[in-house]
Length: 503
Image (cartoon, rainbow, N blue to C red; front, top):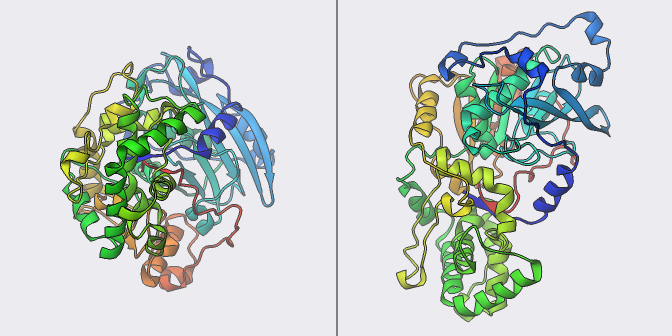
């Protein structure tokens, strides 16, 4: 589960300056809102819920005043957008939800406010949160509000000092639960959670631990790595995806980049020197080079479409070094495994190596003499000063829960997306839940890309879960349409991509 760093690192640095640093002690507001004992076990959480009540006097107050009246909530900035209020906030969270008195940090969230009488969509991408207005697909479908959360330990939403043992899926789900509890009295209508990729995973984990919070879940392209050491599904995927001609082109370029290792690594060393890149975490330029090259085929299918095969060199053996370099750099990104590329994503790699799992694939078309390290584990991408121990039960627990208890859950995958090779599946205990696949699409698959009948079904279920389905839609799903018009600025479909092979 990897990706390369480009403009995102610059953006992260810029928006990071807007937030305050985490604090080392618990605030009075936090202790008051949580109580002294902290939350109970995950199973006990499953029985908790909250019902918001809003008075007429509250409704007459400005939305910003109401948000800032929440204990622990503070303003970072507000940005205007026609038809909405877009507000960036910090919310005081406990480092450890089981022991809230043992320190807090500031978690960044954003609110795209439309109307408290509309439903609300709770979004996270599982990484940093954007401080520019955007609207996820379910938000457009239900014409609602949107609350977006930055995932814990992604800067600036990181405790200081950082106790990495407190970065796990339950703690993150508990972050969402507290935000929901804080905002539900203001946004009292139905709530849906959503996210793409790692965000889709996050929405699923939140539902597992707090199934009474949300009225529905829309999880896009969410991997489900149940058994970390069994990854044959990925090998089968790469043997069949696309056309043989396209696979052969990609495989040949990837192999050629390893055959020409010496000359291209010289180019890589110069590139690193020019950009100030170092390779301490991964253990050297050679390891970084091979990691980037081995990401190449995966990266193409994750973010490209079959028509893009025409951009791949057709005769790799006779292509120039620059042609091979440029193709690999465009798809995988040679900055990905430099220290400067890995740093932003340390929280992801930590989770991949402790709970989420990470795929290992094979390369039967490349002679073993050209591969020195193979697909490297997440441990290689996290500084050694941070301890890591894998917990194999974490994903088994979530997978089993989804199969037995999924209710009002929609999973959307892309046919050509490698991450869909290991996906969530439903069992006999699932109710009003669906797993749908968009033909020909990649890691950007969405409801709009489904075949007509499935698109109508998914849209109708989202509207119904949000409490805004018309009688016509309830009677006939083919009548379902998004309630808000498409907005090219708000409804960007490529915001999940930040160039790397992380989900």
